[in-house]
Length: 274
Image (tube, rainbow, N blue to C red; front, side, top):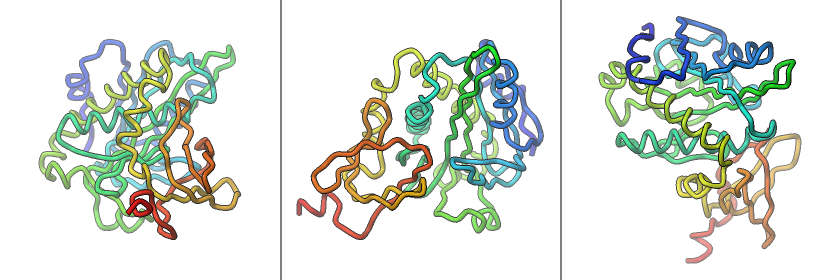
């Protein structure tokens, strides 16, 4: 089912955003990144679609989405922060999505660095990238994918436990309110990105830690061609780096090509104290 550009614009109620709605595309993030590399936009762009044929997440992973089954959109914003700010701004975007959902009765948690969890299962993912045009002007591109309604084939294709918004709001309501939810989330992400660009991540750090799914738990950090590292997750710092306690020492890890998962091989903080 096609998205209504008029409905999105009506719910968004922002005059500083150029809205683009397409029936299908390879990747909304790739579309905006290509454009931003050629010439940085002077205004915010919101590009949404009902279907992606080459959707992707972090580290080149495929984002599986059936037509109409997910909210799929990307934002492009003029960007002044450092080129290496994507790790922290991803966390800020996660906080914005969590707060938006909380405001409408849906409680979620955040998984470092880019997942939104509902009852421990992936509800949504965020992909942030920074493009630079020939003049040196930078653009932040934020990609958002949120599961609305998952069919059995789609669930089987996703190699991890997943959740859908319909579990909380009902299938009919989710289907009827696709444009409303897209506008809500896009507005929240725009505000978070602008706040980050002006003030950095420090103001949002405690909000992230309060919703961090693995805070105080034993976790395993893996990827980037390195051996897995296990320890207790102590939250994130002002730069969005994971604080990992191992053998009494505190390590700071950037996201890069690394992923995080619960580690059941040892006790978490709560169990160690009991």
